[in-house]
Image (cartoon, rainbow, N blue to C red; front, side, top):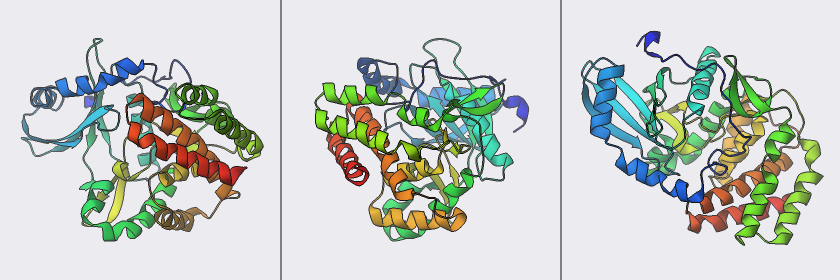
Amino acid sequence: MSENFLQKAETSVSRNEPIFDPKADSPLSDEDLGKKKERYELFDAEAELARIARELLGTTLKNFEPLGTGANAFDHLVFRLDTADGRAIVCRINTDALVAKHFPVETALYRAWRAAGIPSPDVYAVVMRDKPDGLDYMLLEHVGTTDLEKHLVYHPEEREGYARKTGEFLAGFHTVSVPGFGMLALDNGSLRGEQETWRDALLIRFEENLAYLLERELLSASQAEAARRAMAANAVLLDDKPGVTLHGDYHNANIIIDEARGKPVAAVDLSQARAGDPVFDMAFYGTYVPPEIFAVFCDGYFSRVGEPNDFERKLALYQLRIYLGKAKLRKRFGYEERIPAAIEGMERCLRQLL
């Protein structure tokens, strides 16, 4: 597909307010967030995808298959489109009531990684809504055969092998430097973090996060105070070495593999991409897997770049912040049964840091 299919992208994109987590810190009310599922269920996949194939790809739709249904917060739908002219395209659809300002940022990041020789899908088209109740679309190259999470359901014996490979794979993304820290934005066509320091990026809405959990009695006053003390006592770890590109949401559901080759070929869903310390991406992955799998993952990562100084304390500090965000997100989106695990994770981090 030629470049003329790419809608003229915005060269400067930033958020109206600084955020730490796009989902937990969504400006929508909790009531509006609950309506995301309604927007998802109203999407007429057959009609809309046929229109996309006709208008954007210049062909007819032969078949389509859902690759993701937005089960995690109903932020987007993902389909594989098979067209009459033999192409396989991934169509990602933003069902949020808010415009997907991150789509142009994601496009720039995929292209930066491809330019650096890092395996990533090509982005063929980004089409932003032209009316308030519309949807935003991203058309990407179809790569690999499935995501790692699905693969491991049927091949659990491969967990350790893939943990090492995904650690090695993540290290590649961290070879690309960008100015600034925190959530990525576009500045005259160039990627940069929205904050001036890594400390600022990590502490955005920290007090607001604590207040939210305290008000809903998900966190005690002593736990909140311990979190504040842990952050203050370990602030020296938040140095401002040049930031690198971080995936921001690196876990098995977002890692695409080629099953025949037995290796990762892409990391997708860059809606939480940021600039900062590589250990943050590792910490995020570690919140999804048991300790023994995380240890293998780290071995794979360190085989590429070596273990950084103060790794264990940084890991605990970043996971403390991540777990607080997860607890807030899970409350806002109604995942009540998963909140205790986030609080328990926070408490483990506090025991390491204090």
